[in-house]
Image (cartoon, rainbow over all chains, first blue to last red; front, side):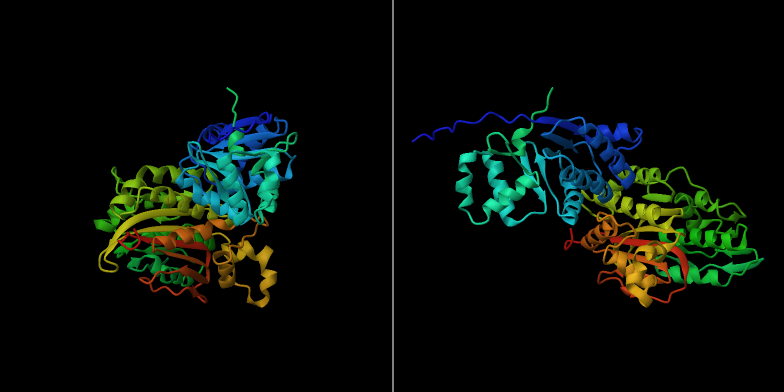
Length: 200
Length: 297
């Protein structure tokens, strides 16, 4: 029997904003450096990103693109990734962050700083392949992976998820950590990867 | 003028002997005689610069330095850019050997670290050169060049953030045929700043009470990742360097004040912690990375 397609709610309206870190690095640090190293450099890049993000109305999604960054050290990862997430957590509700272009050489510094601050981030590690990097419980990883593969969980199916031990709490935690997006109008929960719509 | 003989061999294991030389010097003018120098590595070169800087400040004038005028050591010091760094610290007669035209076999010449820009310059330079050296000499995978750059970036930042004084970095590969049976890469980083104890004292000395000193400060930073900054994100650099050095079965040792702390693999005999060494300002970091074997490739 053919599977019946669920009627979908409207896509949530969300501002998306893409930051090419290498381009920002060129602009913010006087076009001298091609690598994301040292704390002052990381701080300059983060401040530049935050300045641009201030112009967006929540809910907003920022894509921080590392694909052109060949060297990322721990100090810069702390300034750019961890502190950006901490700032986002402390700022207005409804701003989300996804890392893009995360290569094998970026993973270690990013994961180290995320673990140290007990943070997590959604990262595109290959084209169209998203992973949850950083800290999180087994239940959170399970729920996030399920949502990422399913892309969207309609509000009416949340009860079904709640039958799995720990899943409700994990879902709540992921939403409050802004690793998933819950549509405030319809209650549907979306993987952040589904919200990436960069205006031309 | 007091003439002081420098040791004939100057590598990371000879730092204590080198710094002991400083204890012999009073307020008089001094000549460091290194004409019989037979072996020197990046840690030894930075050690001489550090000693010269400390002595210059003490006696109020530049000490004199004599190096071998010819031969392998003179040529090597030229290639490593020792003259440019030493020229600012020492009076040299005859002139120090200058850099030769081709320095393609040099991984990283002696490079002063005084500002953020210098760290970027170091990373740029090793990105261009390190790939071939790491893969051909040390048989490291292509990805190692990024990890190596990150190590250099973090150790250099240690100078800027904690020493509050200028420092130097230098790296080169050697073939330790007799000692280890394979090539190694040696990184030397040094400064004559306030050292780990001085950097951490304001924030952390209270909790250690009477035990506070060079060795407890080194343990606090090296093992526990403490820094003088309240920011939770600080202090990761040394921890992550240690992790990477362990993966490559290497040595990392930090000498500061009168103590030294080290992570040592089974092929190295340095004790993990030493106290009561000859007191010397600042910090001296040594990293030795041996060529990969089939076990750690």
